[in-house]
Length: 126
Image (cartoon, rainbow, N blue to C red; front, side, top):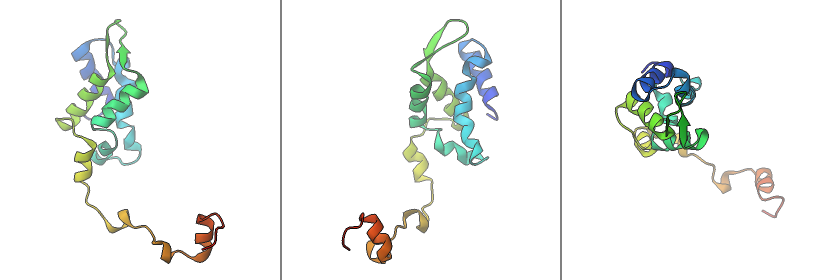
């Protein structure tokens, strides 16, 4: 779906209520578009852990304007399924990321300048 508003319309059709009942949750899923404005933004929240984060951030249930109470997780599952067709794990996303050398590069202790080693060791003898 193109926009959180459209996801919200879909939620209304599925569970009732009004668009505003759902918009906060659907906006949260797509806030990562601030970082990267294409489909890759989904790697940050469109997975099983992201759905559980919704529950942590918005509470375990959502009370609609009609008084109906439903699990917030259902709304998250709906969002991810509408965008991806299924609910991937974060591991599914990571498997699709091509590793680059810079991603794992950390300096070896013997390569650090002596002053930096002293700072890292809190002034202890090197």
